[in-house]
Image (cartoon, rainbow, N blue to C red):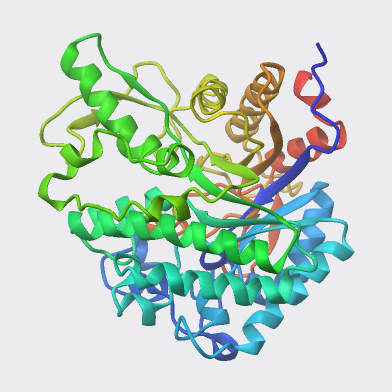
Length: 448
């Protein structure tokens, strides 16, 4: 069996709007809920904000040149809803759309496939004040936004993702309150999850009406293993799996929520209209998978809402974000996707690691051997999954640049290129050089 990556495999890197663009209110843009949230004292490590970030809004040409230097064939980015619609609905901000129009044209001129995501966590603040994703109307607001963007860019974009990691939006923003909008309300969380999925389905319909592109959604999955064979640990692990891994995929692919969900939410779990599931289950062309780690779980009644707590593994390597490095779990979860939800083209839309990076040496090199090895072993896992028969079409490293990492601010770095916050100078790390070699060799560099 061939050990090569398939012909046409997309090699890319990923970013998101609020994490890299900076200039969040420039040229008529409205504030997003992340702009507001990051300016609230105590929300973000170090008091950081995305006001400057990587200054990509002004330096996008430089960043496309960096992508070409790395040999990227594709670039996954997100569109800031509040740049396009400052109030979230109604008036369209021409300069905001113009920015993404120029970016798409610049990517295509460089031979790089644009791979945009419509929503990567930054909701217009005006819509947050109207209830945000907990409001049923938010799904329709999102569909209108999708239609406007697709009408402008759809003639040149061949792949669209509707949402990025809806689980994180809900868990971080509505259950634990550590992400925008900073709420802790289980009833609102259940509604927000449902409306995100409804918004996805309605947006798929709009994208199909406006384009002939491939359309998908991006989810983050974290395989769950039990800390022991005890019945309580296994039951807790099943609940954690339902909450994180099946809450969104089951309605998307099977037309129902996992059986565990009503018990997890109790009285906060609503009864959803049956007709909504036809919208949620609108056919997609691909699934985007964001994979970083797995977790080993034990029963812990204090760990709401699942009653499962992660257990650190002795002897394992952990990243700066506290995530275990376990590449074989990526192969396993790819196989699980195929067995549970059927054959579907998959893109690895995010995969990467935060490690403490040194400053550039006198020779200009940033030596990051742990990240380089992380990429190598996870790409080998992807290759193994392809050999297993999983239809993986592409891989996007997270991230192109060191950037604003949400509640962590700038304290955690994932980039293939280091960014100096003061000068905004980009320096390709050794991991970026390695990834370029992998791309140019169509994966053969993984074997040394």
